Length: 322
Ligand SMILES: Cc1ncc(COP(=O)(O)O)c(C=O)c1O
Image (cartoon, rainbow, N blue to C red; front, top):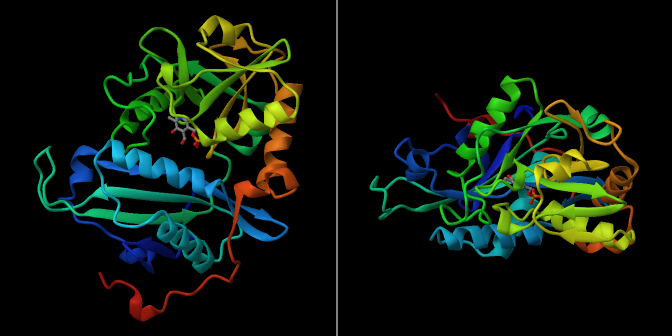
């Protein structure tokens, strides 16, 4: 992953050069993680670039902000315009888009006062999070020694900056032990989710997944996959999942904006099913990528079209002098 091709950033209502999109070291969010964010993908379609489920992501952004008392000083329509302008200005046909709203500089009491809400949107090209090979072959995961925090400690349905220390501990431990991703249990020993993905299990041709009662972020990819699976005629059950359900499953996969639909082929040395992408996962994957690529009319409403323009060059005069 590199930011090299990302030349512009939307910051507080203006599109500015990447190098100028800075914030002060006294920003509240830097010290306490007081921010909320989103991650979405813009895909190349026959009609040009399109952001997948933009409105759903912005709804979740505003809901996360409300939970954490962060007043976003822009309307959803202004952020839609911001995302559209930013992707077009960078000349991307496909990319990842990251809006973030955080408490800036003003005071450093834990209880914030006089801290402006800074709103920034970044965009950059980002390959599949768990690897293109992972999408085809599946990934090896480990059950994390770190538990997913419970919603009585911090709301898991909000996507807030500080809570990602929990995910970071889990994924660093997993990677240090040679796994692609960590799977976190909740406080009651049920499966929760990956450090940045939701979990699905396939058993007897049926799909199983959990919900917010098991400390997960309610993923928008999860929601899309639930609809795609039902439309494909699969029965879907939402309930608590145990590790034993996963280990005895015929297939399992992760869903997430970054990881898309990634098969799980092994958990701590135990093969899941045949130890490779299974047929149900493959069907769900194809349906998902047909929807994101604008190849399935039924899901056109999930795509927000973006005008394609060649990347705008940053005039030298605007570049920050350091
Ligand atoms: C902890 C966690 N769970 C699940 C997801 C998947 O959510 P979505 O499909 O909305 O990207 C993400 C990614 O945003 C995440 O960070």
